[in-house]
Length: 123
Image 1: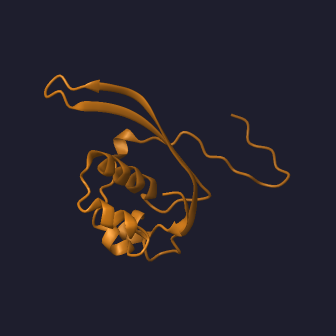
Image 2: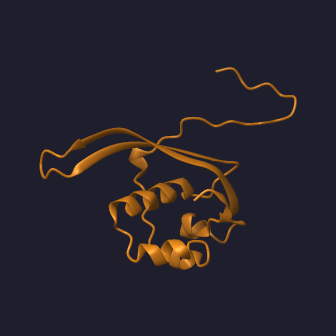
């Protein structure tokens, strides 16, 4: 999901037509922090940290990217092979298969501004 693409499918529906959604996601990494079995049914419960870097994001883009990845890992995306082979061809079709990750599980850790000749603000 990295590279320069039309990320319209991952941007909130009401914001898709407000701007050009061709963006570059330069980094998308994950790290498994903790994994354990559910007491109730033995299903795995995982805590995963995602790192997503870009010069900018569309509304809800990161929540939708993470939700899509979680659904892929769970096997909850129907006809996954076909969907992935046509990932960037039809954003409206892809958008039908995207569930946003809940906001309560996501946090913004850091914003980095790069500007010529200016020093960063002190913490």
